[in-house]
Amino acid sequence: MKEGEEVGLIVQKFGGTSVGSVERILNVAECVKEEKRRGNNVVVVVSAMGKTTDQLVSLAKEISSEPSKREMDMLLTTGEQTTIALLAMALNQKGFEAESFTGWQAGIITEPVHGNARITKINTDAIESKLSKGKIVIVAGFQGITEEGAITTLGRGGSDTTAVALAAALNADRCDIYTDVTGVFTTDPRYVKNARKLHDISYDEMLELANLGAGVLHPRAVEFAKNYQVQLEVRSSMEKIEGTVIKEEAVVEQNLIVRGVAFEDEITRVTVLGLTNSLTSLSTIFTTLAEHHINVDIIIQSITEAETTNLSFSIKTEDLNTTLKVLEEHKALLNYEGIDAENHLSKVSIVGSGMISNPGVAAKMFEVLAEKQIQVKMVSTSEIKVSVVVNEVDMIKAVEALHDSFGLSESK
Ligand code: ADP
Ligand code: ASP
Ligand code: MG
Image (cartoon, rainbow, N blue to C red; front, side, top):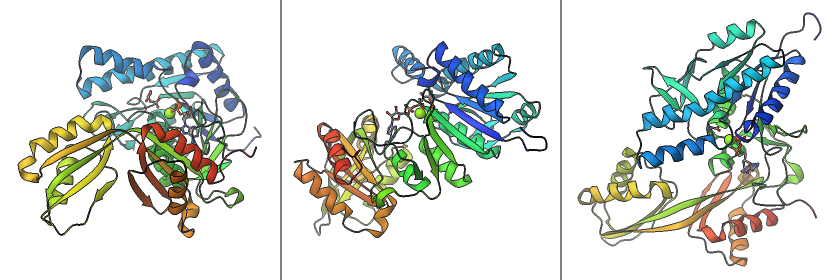
């Protein structure tokens, strides 16, 4: 770096696979070293090694079917703590000054919610003091602490959010998300061979894709990036090639209306039968479910003049037991005759900003699905997406058909 030039600040994040073994951690240390050698200050955020978080969850389940959420957070945060110490050692070994920080040492404050807390504030003093001394700062992803001192986690995949939130709080020049794929693809490349890497994508499109099941980025990380205008790049930790840039305005290649296809399995459709047709019945039912933290997605109500009506809504299958319990407990208040639940469903969504000015996208989607004999069970639309609920067995077939029909597949 030339004299007088300002030192840049780069936040790098490495996910579970990228730190999955000693060898991989040494590879990460090389990546960090390179950035530091370019003259930049570096903050590194890491996940737990490989499948550690899953293994910790299984351990807890062996002890209790419903472990305390406080203790789950205590347990799961140990995963990331292992990685930060090992990476700091690897960098020290290579002759670089590096120090590791847990989420709470790094000043990451969250709301008082276990398992899925939002970051409310970051006190960056401790990190900044180390950076000013030229040290590499390594922060445990996915964890924080409440104002009251309870340890929390940010939800599965939450290390991305730690990285982007830190990049925003520290006013970093860039936030690079290193992972096990080479960028953001038109759909999950592990399931669809024809998936194509995108050169760039807008915050809004990425946010929809992430919320609709594209696990490559944690939705809240994209939300932070959009709100604080943090430019993100998703790239490979193994291959040194250009990744995908996520920014305000993306260049749309070949005028494609649809930019990506996302999907999510383990969806259940719940139908409330014979619900009394009153002005307040809908608000009562959804307020009751919300009070019990049940996230309702698509809602369908048939219009009828009769005294009772049927109401369907979709939820994550993991929430089914609680949903049934809540509905049963409040049966007298809610005033319905029966409940029906259909499992083994999936949601498939097409996303693209171009939809705003192009009518007929939903119609084409239904046509494509009908041609493949795929039954659509529920539909939901917004300005830049159309989602359908289909049988789980049809999920990948639907994704592939839509991916091809909307021109996203690699040209053969
Ligand atoms: P990390 O541990 O690095 O955070 P994740 O497993 O959370 O990695 O995210 C990377 C994975 O996201 C990929 O392996 C891929 O299977 C999945 N994925 C889902 N949708 C997409 C997409 N549209 N583009 C790229 N990867 C995707
Ligand atoms: N280790 C956590 C998980 O597996 C957080 C993360 O990797 O982002 O979900
Ligand atoms: Mg992830």
